[in-house]
Image (cartoon, rainbow, N blue to C red; front, side, top):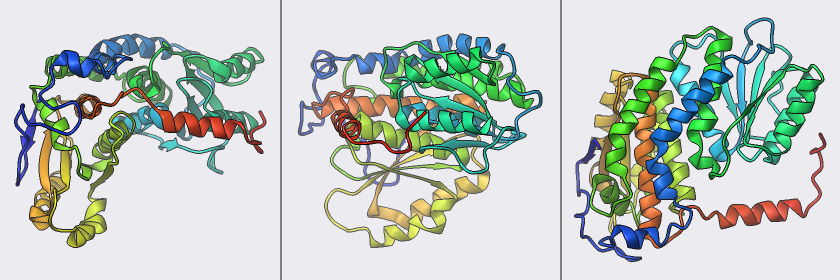
Length: 385
């Protein structure tokens, strides 16, 4: 799995106990806390990526909504429906001919207009912020691609497309948590971004990523507590967790880790990226409290990292010293997509195992559901179509 102990401490042994259901619990005990089968869904991600590969290639054949290449690409979404935009931006960054921007809010930035391409991505098709972005994109005459499994987003897009508007639709399979549908939500956006901005067909990168993740799948199978992924899940429990990457690719991977630890494991986690963190966050470690269990830093390293950022990682680890324990997770593959997804795949599995080791259901999102219910009971000014 390419997980290495850092400069201090180390991963706990497979039999190490933890308050909860016990780190030595067998696979059957773990699965009792996983009624939605999230562990199996994560392990099967390579298969999802194969299906998404087909979706992406089909999407690339959609009629172009703009006569000319777009001036910019905006991916509007929230949560698990937005992270695919971060991944697309990270993968195409070295060759991108136009900006690729991820928008996580209501409406759209003021500069978006009729010459831009807006992906509105909502797995449920009912995310209110994304519906707001869709309405604003239509008002400004931007080209829009709605990506969803159903819901009002696809209904509105179908009606607008039938009326001759520059709107297209991509329908993805339903039945998953949005954060577990990364492949479905990402690859159509990647293919259309490449096709409509003049970039190379990404199929070779996708095929490599599928092969890389297949090789990883054997190490994240839901078969008990004994592997490196499970050991890392035990190591991050009951302590602050910092996930660091480098550049656009490492930043996207680290943020995915943070979000998955938040939603699946119900743990607070923090992410940041080199070189920026060396201009601010490194100073925060000077004031880190001593004593107690030290924070764990999960350092994500990709072959695409700038060599100078690798040097920064080493120096930063020396400066932080024994204030933290370190674990390094290394990417696999040659292409940027394979490297990014190989890092994310480990994080997804770690987050689910961490939930199960705590005796928690990784699929449960009670606070998010309660928040949506309370919002729905209140007036919503500015949310008109």
